[in-house]
Length: 161
Image 1: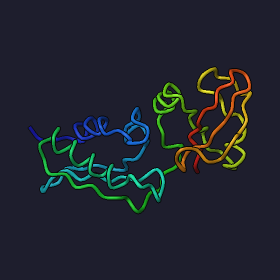
Image 2: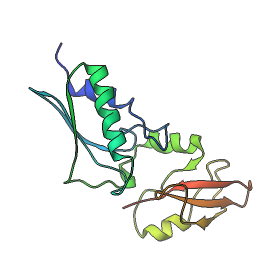
Image 3: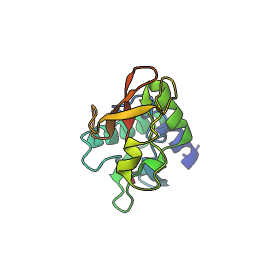
């Protein structure tokens, strides 16, 4: 039976982000194209951060997962024509992040600095009575906030435009 694009995208749902293991490369909007060629399956992806140290690891996970699931040779390349922004994340990704205890990024519409500081809802109690404690979290794509209502410190996946 020939491999279809639908088969490829279904297999890609199993490739999880190494730093946030509840999100797949599909949830994060990292895949910019797939195609089946004579020599195998070709996947184009973009990292969520240009200097992401996990890019080679993610590429290898895509390759090994698809080769196992589709029994085909797989080529993965970085798409140099597209750039990632946080608006590429699916609505399901936002909910998964929240359930994981990380505030999802707001939909990017303006100045990133203001959106990091304002209206960041606590993933534990949904209160917006929060403040930015540090623009630097455990990774470069996260900031640290404090919720005045429930008293939890939480990470926020920074919006990126």
